[in-house]
Length: 148
Image (cartoon, rainbow, N blue to C red; front, side, top):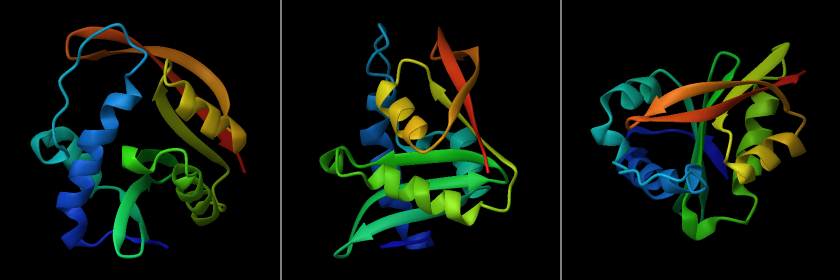
């Protein structure tokens, strides 16, 4: 089931974020340190500004996604449940919620091929590349869009 975020979910979602975040950067040639969402002040602020959705099965939270206006800002699945298409389910749910928008946007680490394949399978297309500094390293990002 996909449902709206509840305050009681925060600790679980923060742990999923910490566990899943290394996969986002797994093809980068650098060693990064990953923290709980609760320890990342700027990201936590963005989290609370987002419309967050939770995928839960049999009482267990397995992932979450979220958006702000026309921007898909969050999509993380507990690594124990990868390859079960939970991220794709969350994304499809968000697409349905946002179907009144003309264009949806996302940004990913360009080397994150799994995320890219997931987004492309649902109609997102590469828009532009950009560079971002992450823990002192310049990383190549990819902006993608989908027309609705």
